[in-house]
Every structure is written in C-alpha cells, then in structure tokens.
Length: 441
Figure 1 (cartoon, rainbow, N blue to C red):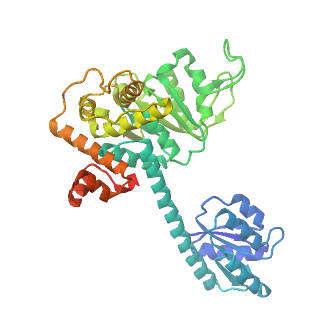
Figure 2 (cartoon, one colour; figure 1 turned 180 degrees about the vertical axis):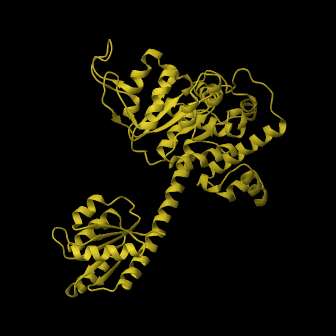
Figure 3 (cartoon, rainbow, N blue to C red; figure 1 turned 90 degrees about the vertical axis):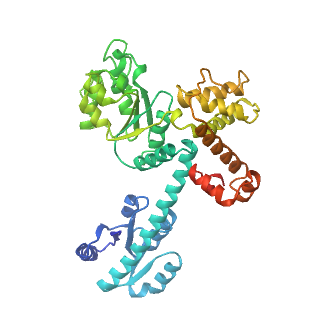
C-alpha cells in the first residue's frame, strides 16, 4: 500500500502540524513551503498524493494543480482552502483536483481523504506497470525471436533481470546472440536512456587494454595525445557489455574488480578518482569458475560478475525456432537489398532443420542472406541427419501453424479453414508450440 504524501504550504506552523500528524499515522511525508520547490523535485510516477494550500506566494495551489495535471493527469492533488475559497475549490475539482479540505480541518477527515487518494493512486500505478510489462513483452518478442520453450523462458528472465540493479553473466556459444540479449537487458531497464557500451575483450591487444578500459590523460604514455575517456567512464549511468570476458588480462581483472567494489576509477596518468555508476553485463563461452580453478581468471571477479546468469541455448537445441528466424533474416535481407524471395519449400525446410548449426543464429543469418543474393540454396554446408523424424515433424508443424497465423493476422476461423483442423486440435497444437493468438494480431 502506498503511503507517500507531499505537503505544500507557506505557513510553517501548518506544515509542522500536518507533518507530525501524518508521520504518527504511518505516512512518509515530504514538506515544501513553495509550489516551485515541490515541482522541481517531483519525480515521474510519484507513488503518492500531493496536499497543497491554495493561497501561497509565487505559484498558487491552483497553478500547482494545473502543472501537475500537465505532467501526470492521474496524480491526486488535495487542496487546503480557507472559508472564502470553497467555491473556487469546487471549481478546481471540476478541473481535476481529487478533493478539498476547508481549514480548520479535522485530522480524521484528512486521513480519510488521503487514504482514498492513495488507494486510487496505487491502482493507477499498478495498471501502468502491467501495461508497461505487456508493451515490453511485445517488444522483446520482436527482438528475441522464437517460439521454443527455452526462448520463452529466456524472455521472461530478461524482463525480470532488466529492472534489477545486478550484474549479469551471459553464457552461450559463439553466434548465439549474447550481445543482443545484453542490449535487451539494457533497453528494458531503468538505464535505457543512458549509454550502452560494448567492448570485445578478445579484440584488444593486452598492452592497450588498460587505456581502452580506463582512458588516459594527455602524455600518460608514448603516443597518448590528448585526454581520452575510457569505456568504463563513458558507460557512466548506463551499461558496459564485456564480451568474451574470459580473454581479459589478469592484471586488468584486478583493476576492474576494484572499480566494481569502490565505484571509482583513475585514468592513466591521473591521480584523480572519478565516480562511476554502471551495470556490468559480461558474456562468456566457457565456465568462468572453471577458468578460475585453472588459474586463468580471478575467482573473486567471477563471483562479482555472476550475480545472475543467463544461459543462451544453441540453435540445435531449439530447432523449432529455425523457420521463424530464417523467415525473419530472409525478409530483412530482401527488404534491404530490394530482392524477392520465394517461400521455403518442404525439402528446403527439412535441410535447415537437419543441420547442426555450429555457428548458431549468426550462421543461419548468413545462409538466409546468401539465399536472398541468389548465391546458393538455403542449404548449409555439412548437413548431418541427426534429428529424429518426430522432432522434424514437430518443428515443421510449428512452422506451418505460425505461417498460417501470420498470414491471417491471428484470425482463428481463417486458420481453421486453411489447415482444415478442428478448433480443439488447433488449440492443443498452439499451446504445445507456445503460440498465442495475440502474437499475430
């Protein structure tokens, strides 16, 4: 239950009396003597109610109400009025004020009004949160494509972790989409408007690693011309994505650990400490703890990075996602290159489903682009028959269902007619393959 109240009144005696009474009644109270100061510190989606006098120097309570309405029409404002201000307060309620109390007011009347307003505010904020979650789910489904159970679980985990202030370690094979997942963790969290900085630890020569990570002052070393902001400092307020973290030199691991512990860094050639607030998302193919036991990675840093872990399944473990992913890559390439591509035939789809995809999603995207360019059939090299007939049939069935639902924009009657299925059978198959009608509307 919400219990935050902002009190705005230019009379110190009233502010003090109301603050003390509300504190004793279990409310969290913030007081201001002027409306301008209240507006300057009013956060977005404030989880509470504003209690304001009408007549004040500077902005009046009515002007405060108008500005609050402009920012958040559902934020309750209760006005405190003198006897002569009652008609004006009634008019203000027509303009959006939640309630008004005539001075002197009884403490019980104040508490009753506040509790009703807070209950309403709580419902509004919960409704907003649910709508935002639904929007994020839809956006995430268009970023992390797949109907497999493992992808559904991954999307759920990403949405949960995106809002939490913890470091995340992503484990997955080469080409499985680790940077895309890191980007989603950033985009769907509170740091989304701040920088997302990606650094591939395996791509930087060891002698340049410290300068790349921490930056340097002019003349810090030979060739250091001018000041340079390092990746850690540049990611302040946002997210630093460290890909192939297992390749980070041990000497830099010690310094990164210190930054995580103290939230401070020093550029090369400087003695000045700089505060940094960032979230670290690291990606690795091997197990970092096994790397630590082998002496190739610091164990204390591994635990710091691995507060939460996400495992990205290889493409061969989610073959039912191949048709959807392939269609997406073909469509994107065709649109970009101005080409037309025929739909997949049954034999072509079978060849795609049979392949082991050692390069994972990246390899599939490459095959799709080559098909659009007309360089070859959608048939990757080294196809091996390693999948059972039942598994192939399941994947093909999921592809057919998804294609029909997409064509008919979620119109179940049209899908039933095209596929010639009873309603109950279609429902069972959609549930088994993780397909929901709302995904195709």
